[in-house]
Image (tube, rainbow over all chains, first blue to last red; front, top):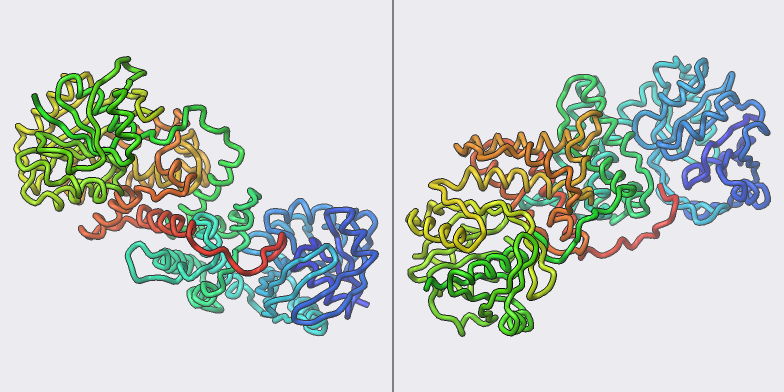
Amino acid sequence: MTRILIIGAGAIGSLYAAYLARVAEVWVLARRDEHARCINERGIRVTGRSEFQARLNARTDPCELTEFDFGIVATKANQTREAFAPAAHLFPQGAVLSAQNGLGSEEIIAELMPSGCVIRGTTFMSGTRLADDHAHYELDTPTWMGPFEPTNTPFELVDELAALINASGLKAEALRDARPAQWSKLIFNASVNSVAALTELPHSPHFAAEVHFSDLGNLLHDLIEEGKTVAAALGIELHEDPWKMNCIGAQTNHPPSMLYDVRHRLPTEVDFLGGAIAREAQRVGVPAPLHTALYRLIKAKEASWSWKKENVLEAVERE
Amino acid sequence: MTRILIIGAGAIGSLYAAYLARVAEVWVLARRDEHARCINERGIRVTGRSEFQARLNARTDPCELTEFDFGIVATKANQTREAFAPAAHLFPQGAVLSAQNGLGSEEIIAELMPSGCVIRGTTFMSGTRLADDHAHYELDTPTWMGPFEPTNTPFELVDELAALINASGLKAEALRDARPAQWSKLIFNASVNSVAALTELPHSPHFAAEVHFSDLGNLLHDLIEEGKTVAAALGIELHEDPWKMNCIGAQTNHPPSMLYDVRHRLPTEVDFLGGAIAREAQRVGVPAPLHTALYRLIKAKEASWSWKKENVLEAVERE
């Protein structure tokens, strides 16, 4: 039976783990001991799109694990290094999928696993982790996956993992080139998340409004156009139109993950979203002033959480 | 004796009122009845750069006032119309100075006073209003003032008011063209205030840091350069270098007024700061993508305060 390790058991990791446990031997590498204990005792319960209880194994110490055929990294992008480094030796023959937001996680995984195979992944499926042993499955859009070019991952490995995911009841699509899918979501995600983090608005109708000069939709349009220019300079033709994705999302009033992070003063994924677009733009020599500006604002906003309060008197009508 | 009406008694208005009361007959048009009562009973006490007690008159109802030689509007820029409209008829022969932030208040004052004379003003003096009858005077930099071009204000009127201000113990400089001074402060103010409002950092050393790609000082530099391009397109040569002003300010850790507004969820002056640069740029056909982007973000941030909370479940690990 195929052995799969899920690294990170948030909403997405829990869904992969529970579904795949129906067709493979699944282990979860969790961060907290009580989380692993809970999964070992009770498994993971899925509700929403389908309802079932999965039995599986969890550990927090990679020393208690042996080799795997596949790994799926499902942590926040900015936790990739810390979470995957202790487990990187467990895939001497296997392949590891990044099912994370943005751009740059595959590079970190490949660096930690010098002779291993990495799979470039982008998922739009969504869910909510209601408890350590309970994930609610919401959007059942597929995981798009393809070889991570620098590791020369054979397409057959991608196909094999995609087939397993599809057999489990989730959706996956194996692509010869996953970059068009990844960049479509990257441009959408970077634009919407940065704006939500700075305005503290959920993904509301404001994001698609373009009537007045001051309307926020004009900025989203400009950010998305700028992202498309960077993708084009990299020779990437997009898989979907990020502006259409934005217009659909703007009807949901859904809080993007970076809005959640900002509200709770947690480090955001901006280095892998808007920051990744800004860096790629700089690397290939095309301008990306808007993504660069928003990236710098969000890094400074993160810095504000630990910055000492001003020591001057703050009075109501100081000018 | 020259009769002067101060419209708005925040920190700056209180300082003008108290100082000018030493050389002129000064009345204050306040918003709150208890504020007017307090000033009528106790005057205004000044501390800081100098210490004295001024006796003067205050009202909240303009019907209780007669004509004046000069007016000084010292409200927040976004309160100009509401505060000045009821008093606009009190200056049939007089001139009215805008001592407000940003660009656009003079236009509103002129519109409300069709045959009157408006004086373009920019002040860098700063203080803190410690109580209704107590203003603390901090930076004693001058008020720069000049004729507001569309009302053909005689320079002699500007000179007369500047002389009164100087005689009172404050500093003023009458300029044939006050736009270079106004735009120097506008570019500085728009850049620093927008960034502070979005990052929630006071004017800290981050604003001048330019070592790493993600450093905030790079963005300030770009915003200031963009503002200078717009000023140049309008034929305005700057009075001071806004980048130097930023580097000095970045050592103060002072909370800019828009940071105060954002913290207290008050409407900001962004329409008169970054929004004014964005609109002027559009009017003369030069690009100002950064000021325009930050303007839209801040308008959306203001909108977030009254936007309904998302109705979807917000859980810790929603992806």
